[in-house]
Image (cartoon, rainbow, N blue to C red; front, side, top):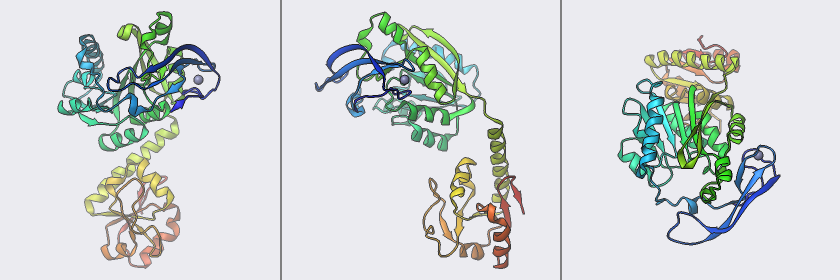
Amino acid sequence: MGEITGCSTCGDVRLRPVLDMGLQPIAERYDKCIVHPLELVECARCTLVQLSYEVPAAEVFPLGHPYATGNTKALREHYARLTSEISGDLVPRDLVVDLGANDGTLLDGYGPRVRRVAVEPTNQAVKCLSKGYTTYQVFFNAHAAYLIRKEHGQARVVTACNVLAHARDVHDFLTGVKYLLEDEGVFITENHDVNVILDGLQVDTVYHEHLRYFSITSLTYLLSMHGLVVQKVEPIGTHGGSFRMYARKQNTSELTGRATQVAMQLRLLLDKACAAGPVYGIGATTRATSLVHYAQLIPYIDCVCEVADSEKIGLTIPGTDIPIVDEARLFADQPPYALLLAWHLAGTLVPALTARGYQGKFIVPLPEPKVL
Ligand SMILES: [Zn+2]
């Protein structure tokens, strides 16, 4: 908040003044008048045009923000055309997520055969909810993406129309987009074109809500920082001159492919093991947290056993509800399978636990999932 001293995309501090519009009240605050500086500056490195001063989000976006997309007929038709075009590539049950969904106008166009998720921080979210869309009333960021993916899986399409200009931390936002998007998914974003604003003297579209003003160049640069590759750009008429950008994730590396494959094999193996009874993890090590989250093992593990004097007993594996328990439970309950989260110690752990009376089988998760 306050004066912005570096480029919000690349961090460069060489910000050239473009247009100073003086001190101004917040555009859609009808209840009070507090003035703040309103000035455009341009980054010498990545060419992003942005405001030089940031007003607190709660002041610019009060919960009762009055703007509703659905009130503008041209916008309703615009989004209907977009979703109709996208829908050709969707199959039933695909997940589509609209960021800054406002009253759900864009999501309306998809129809009920796909799963629709709305993310909207203002009370317009109530309208999304009343339309039956899964709704998160939050500012979108990496944490919101984590919660959505945990609950619904990854998205085939993520849309963000006239939202990137508003995001407080655009890197947190795009980290979330990339996390939420399927490897083959598409991120579609529409933004007002800064060249249209400056050349066409649309200075009345400069206000505190819009922290940044993109060109195709500056947005392409920003997306590339997050491994999002622009596939197509088209000019659109919204707001007197905008552009729509389609981006996909960079091709995943061979390592990602192998790691994803192993994670899937491990889930298949654990799925079979769960049919025989509960699965206990062995060893609440640091690496256990990484594996449990990366391979999405939360549903398969009942608890994780630690040696009796461990200070971790009574806690849960970070980011999960999986309890960490005294390993005495392993011998008392005799679960049919134990997952060796401390698999790098298998050589000593397996004989030791067996000698102490555990009669079930051990699953080694990496580098190749197998039952001992
Ligand atoms: Zn920059």
